Length: 430
Image 1 (cartoon, rainbow, N blue to C red):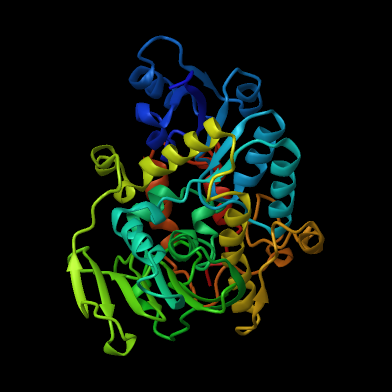
Image 2 (cartoon, rainbow, N blue to C red; image 1 turned 90 degrees about the vertical axis):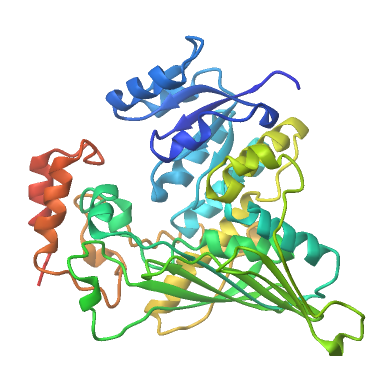
């Protein structure tokens, strides 16, 4: 192993995942950035084993340090801005999902990677569970033929109190995100298994009249989003994401010779074949997948082992000076699916083409597309697309959310209790 790759982590929440990297990844924690000094003190006490860990409340100052790479675990709608700054400061970037929140940010991000030559990878972990890696192995062997249709889901319900805690304030991204936007956990699984790219997108949301099951929910989001993608090989992929009331992270695909899926009940990989294939293949087998390597380390990591593999492949890309599989073009493709699907929802299900992110001539058409549902304080909501179609707030949701926000030490975006009180005056609760 050469000299370790010195990383600076932005964000002390989700960012903790990246603060104790395995030695084989080649990464070493060198700096942490967060706007809250009290959080940095806790991190320093836990992770500064040799007295060299640098802490910053100013991101620009961290970029002036001697770190080699930045891990972005900041807010969902701020990743592109932070990534571009890091790239132009000569740092490699591992960015949490999503890559960008507008199409124009995607264009600027691709250009920054191309101009700087630095490594960029999206930290999408769902493709790297042992089940999905096994399905990819089977698919790559040719046993399933070519994908005709695929499905993937990422549904993560939370109680209202938990949501209030994780989304403190009207302008927190979790309170503004449309139900199609958090799509990378789903679409990335199929893209990685089959090595295909989305080229056209349609989006839909449930619009049932009875919304009583969402009582006291403050987050301005529909129950979930359904996305239908045409892939570049002609196949169709359906993804489901959002806060449906049941956890789901399934992956399933149908090929010209057979099909595969992750069984919900057991977590096993299941392979199916039909007699019409003309081969003497077992029609059905269900088995527990195993890791290709580094199984002990992966098994200890979060998100089914995926958190280990994104760090491993990021370190490998830097050492080889080769862009990783989950490069900036795939990152922008999977991220733009959620944005375009929301445009489709608001257009009655019309299809939208996915930009060719590796083609400057094509992506140039989107360089001024700043369309976004995310509001900043002082923005006029009329200048932004709506964040939901069927969501309606309960009159008591404001008081219940406020009570939780006042109890937590994390008010978000530097807000005070006075700021929170003022923000409620801007929300039409009728």
